[in-house]
Image (cartoon, rainbow, N blue to C red):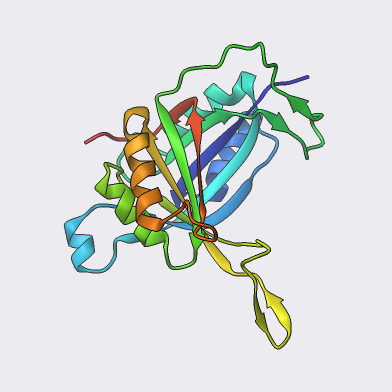
Length: 217
């Protein structure tokens, strides 16, 4: 039985396939590419209304024995050491199912949990509210995020058109932040978007084992 990590790679639009090809060359079996948009702080881009950057998000389940090497090969080949070229990070999967190459597994509760330096903050809100999430997070020390389009299926969220239920569109905001900023950022999002009230969205965080392409001010 193998232990697996999940690698998430965020690149500019059109580079996701290259990232996946690099990962496959180093032993990764496959992955999934999502479309999204990122935010970047730049006064000139703000003035030109060009501050939204189209992104591709690649997720890959990777055997832990090759996760570190794969992550750093991606960083080197995709030039993640340069600002705005992309980021990649990995975290441990507690359980995993759905691939031909492994069986379902649960993490051993007796295993030591690794300390992390970063966390990924995921916030799911109705379409049109992602920018408010980013604004609240930035006010608490975040440095932007990635917006992923999605749709919901909550039993209380359906609207009806011509007697047919319509699933509402959602936006997922993913923000990477150092551990010491996570509480302030999540509190700002919860209070600013009223996340604790029913139907206003959801928020969760994931500890990151390793990250490349992140820059501190």
